[in-house]
Amino acid sequence: MPDRLLRSFLPLAALFALLCPSPAAAWWEYGHETTARVAMRLVKPRTRAAVTALLRRSAALETPTCPARTPAQASVWPDCVKTLGDRFAYASAWHYQDADICKPFDLKSACAGGNCVSAQIARAQRMVADRKLPTRDRVEALAFLIHFVGDLHQPLHTSEHADDAGGNRLKVRYGAKPDTNLHAVWDGLLADPALSRPPAGAAGLLAEFGPAQRASWRGGTVEDWSREGWEIARVKVYGSVLADPCGGPSPSSVTIDEAKAETLMPVVREQVAKAGVRLARLLDEALDGNHPEVAHPPRAPRPAA
Image 1 (cartoon, rainbow, N blue to C red):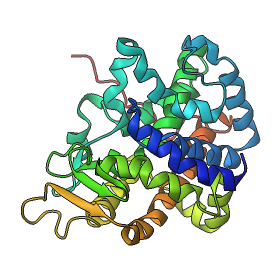
Image 2: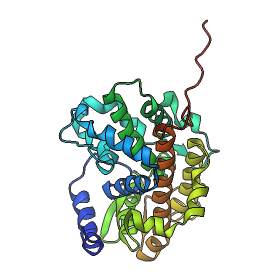
Image 3: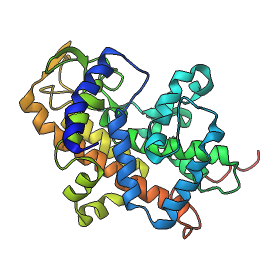
């Protein structure tokens, strides 16, 4: 679809999504698909071939209503399978981690039992790298990995404020939408137009953020990226709508006008670009063939009692 037509289509798609709620969370489809496309432009040739080969086997997932034949489809598969009821209900808590922006950053408390997005990124990467696992397990892990790296870079999937469930309980007046919430704004109402404006899509993001910038983003750990997202949520997300997020009671609703949205769109673009760059790194570590172990190996087993 040409960029001009895509840009005209996205606002309608966002409106449709609001009128017809779905179980999707984090970036809406365009954000996740853009993350995947950025990553696939950056991965090494052997990694790209390995991803393609695994996804050719995606029928093994036995989710015909939720295809995962391409990286873009795989990027939204973990949201799509929420429609399948109990079968994938175990993964519902894996899409986020609620670290309180008004307390010192504490990933351990936000990730009890490993049921959070950062722990599941590490687990999925290990499983993708493990050639001894059944193909079905590795394909599923690949879809989760692609999706969860995108989730981690939506700042409201790394944080919360006053028990608002990552902004889901903070009402927002946004443009012509008088009764949405902060999470939905960042998931797509803000993200879709931010990503579709020129230079649009994966190619546009890579043109906007040059090699030196992208190289700086590749460093660090998943925990570092979690802390970064939490800080962005504190300063940029909540800080843009609350005069003092941690001082005094929160309002029942806030407004994001056009001028404020313009200042936030670059934040969205950078977060999606970071997600693509970092996903490429994790995929290369798991699949390129030159790494004896992935960057986030499992912990040593506990000694026998």
